[in-house]
Image (tube, rainbow, N blue to C red; front, side, top):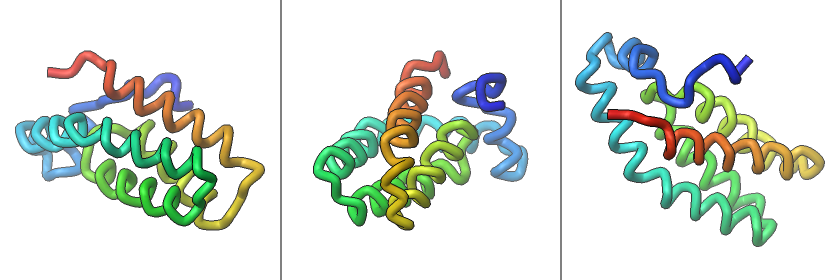
Length: 112
């Protein structure tokens, strides 16, 4: 399902903010600026096997994706956040790898 959805969807983002394309673009730009730091926090929490820190870091990114046109990223971060909160350790590696991949796709997606 998510393969057909682009990493950044300005039209979708505009719908989230009363069809205001300028605001949607600004929110996506802000997310893109903050995304490397979010990624760093998530990696550090995952690599230290700190589920509380992982849940906190993913919750923060999840909130940032709620009003941006990044539907794939929002889904991926929400899944990892829930798994970390519920200590679903059997799912963490796959969800973590998927999230890091989605972050990279968003960061490398041509957006202007």
